[in-house]
Amino acid sequence: MKTIVIRWKVVLVFEIFFSANCFANGFSGDYSEICSAFEALQKNNSQQTQMQFFKAFPSNWYEFIKTYGLSPTSLYEEYDSHLSAFENLNMIDDSVYIERLIYLSLGAMKDADAPALLQDIIRRKMFQSEKMTKRFLHFIEKLQKGHQMQFWQFFWSNLIYDKELEQKYIFLLGLLSENGKEVVSIAYHYFNGGITYPYGGPWNSPY
Image (cartoon, rainbow, N blue to C red; front, side):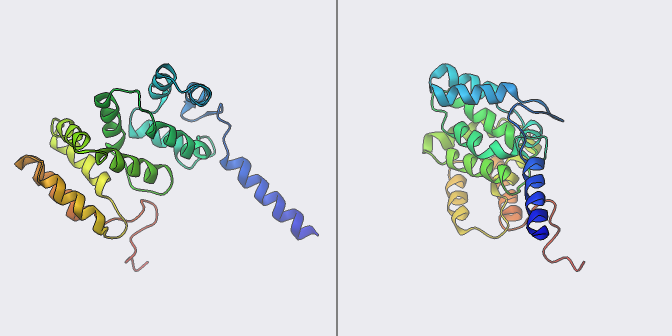
């Protein structure tokens, strides 16, 4: 009987620790704006509520990981619903939306949960149509080379080699300038199957 009670207390503490209230004040500040915008969007999906949610959504990787990373003071429990809502915004100008996705990826690291879902969204959006692909590339090629590399290393990052990414890589080479090809090629060959999760340590580590 005592064992059952102790286990229940452990589970309860864990859930409290990692389930931040959507309006909690954590180390990244007050989440009331993003939560209110999300609730408004769920009640009435309009251009106005979409824009409110878009504006409240993190604008860069630093804000993103503080908001949705695994932490007792983040919105970790909300990451799936919030990112799904962000992916389904269809009344935001494409150029503005693409720019946000690119800035979210600069400095990003492949990890489970919110980072993995963000990466999936970026990949799906980029290859939604050839028109969208070209718009992504147009914006990326205007960035400094270091920032281009940051984007592509996150885009290609995979724990194991992904054959499906090879098809995307070949397709992109046909659309890129020579300068763009160099960065994409380096990132692809280093990061598709060349990383582990940031806090897991190398798989081949002897320690």
